[in-house]
Image (cartoon, rainbow, N blue to C red; front, side, top):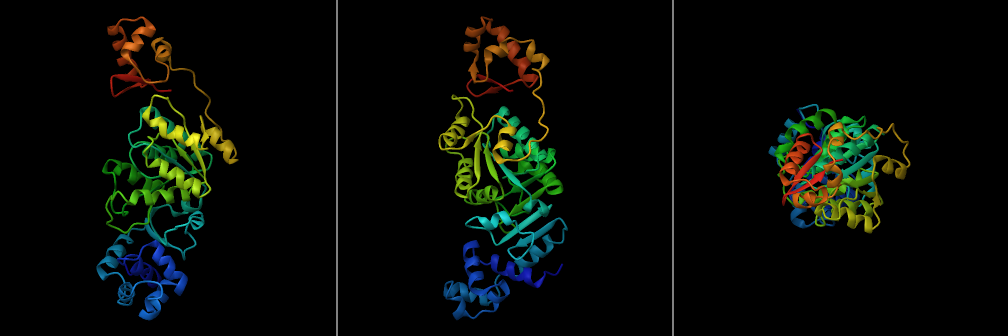
Length: 361
């Protein structure tokens, strides 16, 4: 398909080596529009960019091969490109310090201007963390918040699944080109989000999963959201970057506390010490944001299987090893191992590294 002349001008600049979002914004301020930039003299362009880059712009910007690749991608009606000049450009991103002039989008672009809420956390999440993320996301989605996350393994993937299960769906902000699914293990989820929600990226088609791109996409995750919930995170987690960016953008930051013995709780505890709001249920988030409370699910009775095993009471909710369980319960090691296996098979507990076990609420 032939590209619209205005869109072709946007692409010719954004795909040119040496023009990032900041440089493109400076050129737009100086010249008004991409077509004006492409027709400006080298002398005028050199007031904003280097002489070498000014010369490349005057030569027409991106190559015809690059433009043809985008044109073919846009032949799919699910694919769109949104620029500063479009009414569909997310207004929330115009409030942040470094908005991308151009976004690649696949799916329901109307979600970009809905009320968003971000849920992020560890890629190596526990079963409890995954369960929490999915449950919070589903409830908040039913309350009207489109769930925003980064399509990573663990907490991000669970948040997207919960968002899709609710009424307001989900947005995945990725750090690759939209013709690349990263990580590959989330391919099926990515296809579902493209069909029922929205995937966006500021990176050109073909951009691989480069480590430096993921912290950059985090500013868009929180920029699209009224608040950010961190479910599980180590102290060095990239989720804390998202939380910091959210605070800098004036967004509310929430964190779910965990066991004092869990490395994946330490990042959340650090955030709470720094002023993040401690939450134990989705209702806590909704009350803080001033949203109307949805019909929250009632607390269910303890599973029948759980009621049969006093060992769950001795297990508590912190990670514990078999020796400690034997001391607490007075049961023989063989009996404990048998019960633990049954409880794991019924989804009430999970095994952790080091021979430890943890109860799943």
